[in-house]
Structures are given as C-alpha cells and as structure tokens.
Image (cartoon, rainbow, N blue to C red; front, side):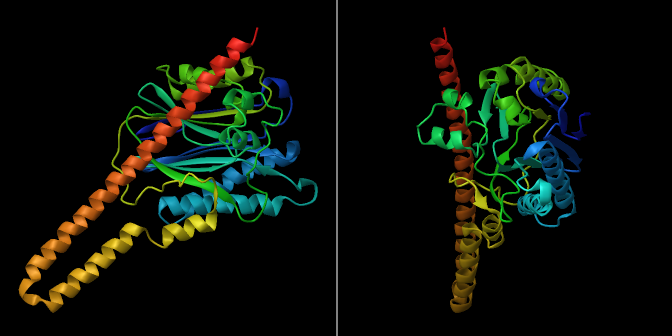
Length: 353
C-alpha cells in the first residue's frame, strides 16, 4: 500500500498475510488518513474466521474514519465516538454465519502537536524518541493480565499457548471499553502501530534496531514485515510507521490522561470529558467569589480582582505542571516495561541451549 503524508508527518503503511497463511485471507486492516492539522492512523486485527475477521477489521476502520472526519466534537471526544461507532457497526453485522466476529482496534489521531491514542485489544503502539523505544499501550489479553499480576514474564507470555486470547475487542457487546490518552509529540519522533503478527514474533530489541534506522517510513514498514516473516510469519502482519518532521504547538484542549486502571466504557469517558474537569470547576468557583468580593467590597475591587487573577494563574500553572509530570511518568513507566521485556528476552536466550 502507498504511504500517506501530512505537512509535518510522513507515513509508511504495509500489511501482509504472513508466511504461514500464504494464500489465505488477510484479517488485518490498516488506515493512514492525512488531515489538515495531522492525520488519523489505525490498525485492526480481525477475528472470527476468515470471512468474519476480514470484514470486521475493514468495517471497523471504514466506520472509524468516516465518523471521525464527519464529527464536530473536540478530537478526544470525537475519537471516542468514532471507536464507539466502529464497535456498533461490527456488532450489527455479526449475525448469521458472522456471529462471533470481532476485531482489535488501535487508533492514533494526530492533532498538531499531540497524539490521541485509543486502544482496544492487543495491537500495539510504540514511540521511538531520542534513541529509546517506548511501548505506549498495554495489551488487553489474558497473558498480559498474567504479566501485570507477576504470574508470567514478558518472555514467557510471548511463547504462551494462550498468547492470542484477547480480553477486550470490538464486536463483543454494544458497549465498548477502551483506553484513551494523549501524548505531546516532538520533532524527530517515530510512531509504530502494529498488529500482534509483528509484536508477537519480533522482539522489542529488534524493533528498536529496525526503527532506529535513518530510512523512510515505507522502507521501515517493509523491513518490519520482512522481519516478522523471517521469524516464521505465523499470523497476518501489519505495520504503520509515522515520522514527526517537526514540533507543532499543542491544541488548546487538555490532553486526556489514562488513569492506568485498564479500559473504560466509552460513555464513561465521554461523560467525564463533557462534564468538565476539576480545573474548570476551580476556575469557575474562583471567578464567582472574585466577582462577589468586588460587588460586596467595591472600595477594594482592584485588589480583589488582582488577587483573583494571580490565584487563577497559579491554579492553571500548577495544573499544567502536574499534567506534564503525569505524562512523563507514563513514558517513564513504558520505558521501564520495555527495559524489563528486553531483560527477559536476554534471559530466555541464555536458557535456550
């Protein structure tokens, strides 16, 4: 497939049926849609038989793109609505012989200097920044739950017989659960979106080695597919690589932050965003009492207004600092997870004669 680009983004996209499934259907689907201030990128890994999986993944991405482009909400809410619409589209088609079909969905909406990431299932997002590879998403799968509980190592999970059992996907029910979070992008960043046909057979150390090469995203995507096939190619393989050419200003809205408790129902995430943030309530309360003070003590109105302004600036500044620290901790945590995964891989290699 051809790559797609925006003014400050360059993208490569490739999907392959996989060496062991040659001649069969490709149940993966991918999306790279340039938009005026960024783009919409996604990977879906279908399930439910050849016909069902192929239909589920393509239907999910078609609906996602159409709903997102036509939406009028702010991008975070619009992305949630698009995932919600994609889920309903799959649920409504899962009748007759297609009962049981479903798909993972990993979607990244880039809006100027921010990436908004919506995640359902075990397709993964990675960020290459400053020579470090960070895994941005946690798999919604049985083996991932065991890793988080300390019952399995990352290396053991990679080879476990139940590694393909997902605990969350589109098409299971009319209410969809997803994780949503935002990330500030920097010039020089490289994003990878992939299905488990890539991440399940190519180690993260090798992913880092391939992504760090100074080549065009489309060439990198081709090398990633080749590496997965060289590792056996047991599943369909999809890679979307996005290069950020230069930094952009952040959008005016606050970036969503994942609480780290796993996926939430879409309507819960929407009500949280539409209901307003704690920062909004604090500023409205401050404005109310400042105005009340000006009205009740007019002789000190200038001082009260100045005091209200200063307190408002302190609240906004503190909120931004705390938000940046939380996002930094998320990236730091991703880096630690990747470091542990690499250590586990090395340990496993030492155990293999």
